[in-house]
Length: 112
Length: 108
Image (cartoon, rainbow over all chains, first blue to last red; front, side, top):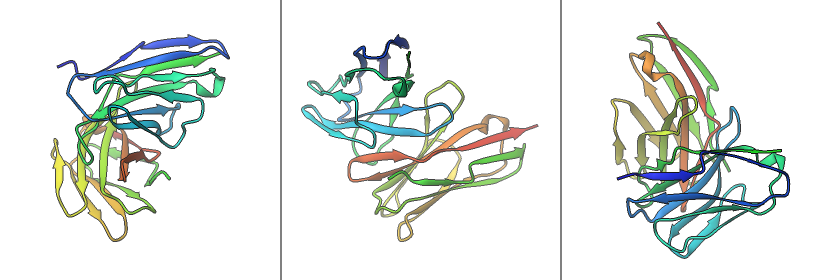
């Protein structure tokens, strides 16, 4: 199993550009989440999904969209990038509530 | 609302013990503990569930006071490999939110 994979590993954007961060898992997990981690800070929940076709907002959803058309994939879309979105983005998955979260390797995003 | 962790940082000598605390204002389903090394993704340590069940990979112990919505992680006989940032995550409903982290440094 590859676990949770994220692409790209690094990305530089200009203010106003849009892009999609990809996340995929091959463990047939129902739960998937996106977190951002600013330097020296904790993880903040952006959006999460409890199954295909179901998504919900986390703590800091503004400026981001998600969709969950399949169990495996959970892409995160930045609508119009801003410097405040410079961060490391982690995708995570788990089989159900109360189970271990498996984190992807992260995407380091810089917005100029 | 994010859980609150304390202390923010700890420095230990190899072999010493430490306790990291986590508290929430919400009624919790579970508390998670993860460790993150610099430049890496968080790695699972333990989950404590409402009702008393615990799941974990390592020889690390923790407690969960359901009435107070508080959890503590106990690191005993610390090793150099324990260095990193420890995060507690609290699960309420279907949301898992994390605290700000506790930086632990273990010195020889």
